[in-house]
Amino acid sequence: MPPPPPFSRPTPPSYTPKVSPEIAALFEEINGKELSDKLSNTPITDLTKAFGLNDRMLTQNELFGGNKPVFDEAVKDLNNMSSFEIARNFMYELAARYNWAANEDRKKQAKSFIKLVRRRLG
Picture 1: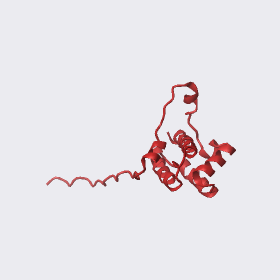
Picture 2: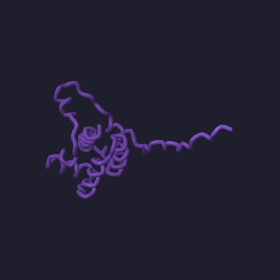
Picture 3: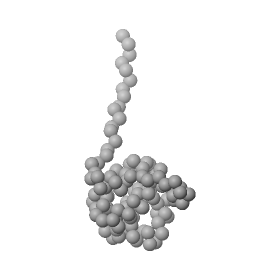
Picture 4: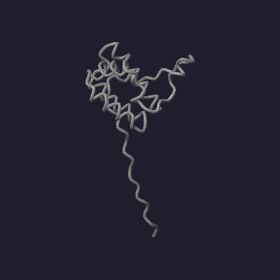
């Protein structure tokens, strides 16, 4: 009698929340051909250090309703994630909760924030 096959645990499917087309559009990557576009895509090692004071305040106010503790916790969590796919799912939830697609100013700031996270996590 042959030995039983080894036990294999099924791999759980990755979780991807349902998002509106407006929010999904924020995450579309645009690859520039200009040197300045390529230089602005250089990797960063720490999200907390990637923000200047003005950018930090603008992002906090536009995308997190001015809630500093929520912004700080989100940046800390994103900084510790292992892949952009995981971070994107987390940001989908943030974008829906804080309505990042509400107007053009928020959309622009959201795209800038997402680009920083993409530079951090690849």
